Amino acid sequence: MTFSPRTLRRATVLAMLLASAVPAAARDFRIAVGDGAGGTQEALGLAFIKALEEKSGGADSGTLFLNGQLGDEQDTVTAAATGTLDFSILAINNITPFSPSVGTLTLPYVILSLEDAEKITQGEIGQQMVDRTVEDAGVRIIGWAYSGFRVLTNSKKPVTTVADLQGLVVRVPKNEIMIETYKSWGINPTPMAWSETFAALQQKVVDGQDNPYMTVHAMKFDEVQKYVTNIRYIFSIEPLIVSEQLFQSLSPEEQANVLAAGHEATLASGQFLRDQEAQIKTDLAAKGMEISDPADGEAEFIERATATVWPKFYDSIGGKEVLNGVLASLGRPTVE
Ligand code: MLT
Image 1 (cartoon, rainbow, N blue to C red):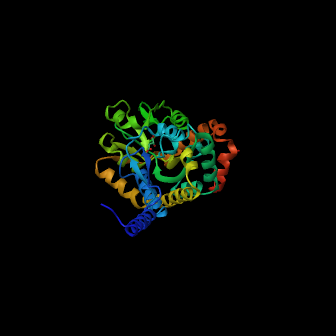
Image 2: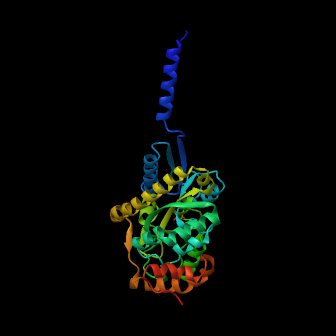
Image 3: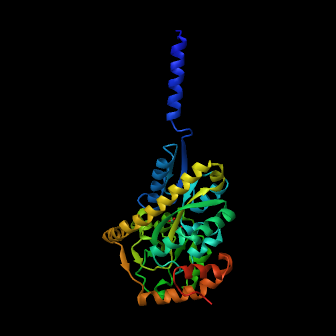
């Protein structure tokens, strides 16, 4: 079959028009997610993908790999730093081993509300932590999920006092601040990767763990845990990180889209928690979880943890003044 020069010209123009209508480089970023479906991590990821698609006109998108399919949370930091993973959404306590400066957000009883968490992460102090994490760990925090207080769960007995905790085997992340906090409460916790936690609870290798209601629900911990104690020692913040290698390879416009999409997803995350947490707690109670408040307004837990744990970590978070900066910006008394 032969074509006239006119037909060929028309076909060429049509092909050029079609090519310009299709986004230049359709990218599908791989986003690791530590938790299961229905939690704050997934909600942050979905909001990020939606915003990124809108801002890039469909050129950039992403796929979430839930339930640690791309590796344990701490391993995803290394993978992103070395450029073998694009993005990850994980708890801040699993970034601290790579960038101790974000440990300020894991110190017990520093962040006391969702509003505190939003103020610190979205302000100047949050930006300093982003910069430090790029330097220390080779990953850039571009969004923040807010998941609520890490409540204590266990399969053995109601816990309302420090004395009740004695004898329980409690899993904690591999995070020195959290390990020391449990030690201040008189027990030696069991550090364990997040990806192994459900099986360890199910097989009764450990009796308990702590995580927010949203996470307990997303991970179906109600199937293997009975008792909940509303301790409030850490307000869980779960960043969305991007490989710095990947970020630096993007055009200025793509970088701006990624940052703006991360910001939009962050704002959506606060709203998601406000809308969902009370109902999730009610659902977990309806499924048979028994919920208690700590005795004496949690006074003994608070006193022991703040008196002994804070001073141990001044150096690793960058000095006492870093903690004081956070406390001052939250309108709270600083430490001497
Ligand atoms: C952990 O306990 O290791 C994390 O908080 C889990 C999570 O990302 O939800």
